[in-house]
Length: 202
Picture 1 (tube, rainbow, N blue to C red):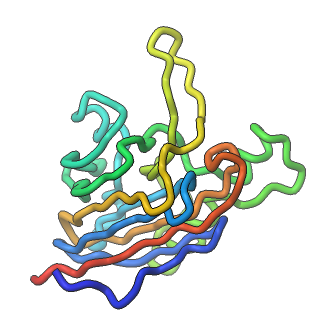
Picture 2: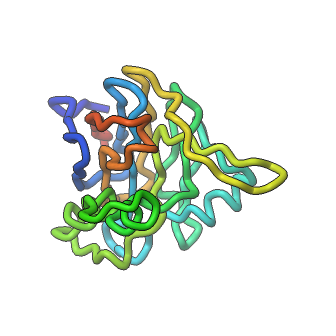
């Protein structure tokens, strides 16, 4: 693999979209610690094929994914595979935060558009409509589940400065990626996210 020229930064409470080719590696880095990054993946040649929380967790038989685990699409094809993970705790249950999240959960009268709005804006030039945005893979998000009651809580991420998770593309993809906008998810502060792309040799 040959590296992209630079490490890219996503500003706090914002998002980006870009493409990966099959064989490329995407590394998502938490430069300051305790900051979530929502990640989406779409088949670049057919945007109706999209990352699927339900199928991935069904096939894995567990909710916490890490090195070696594949992320499946709604058509049961592997879109990404986790190839490195220095944290080991990420979320694939909760939907991207949105203006409705902040209105309903936090009571905000003038809510931020959240990760959902940031993803919708970033992905629009690639032809992805807001209604096609699914549950994201929430890098570094810490969502414990009570095994008896089923109650879920959002706790501070376990990631520390410099922690990372890396994915290898199993097909050509459109990626959406954010620096999450929810205070609760990020232990009360908004920080940037870094990412790096290593291009495959095909």
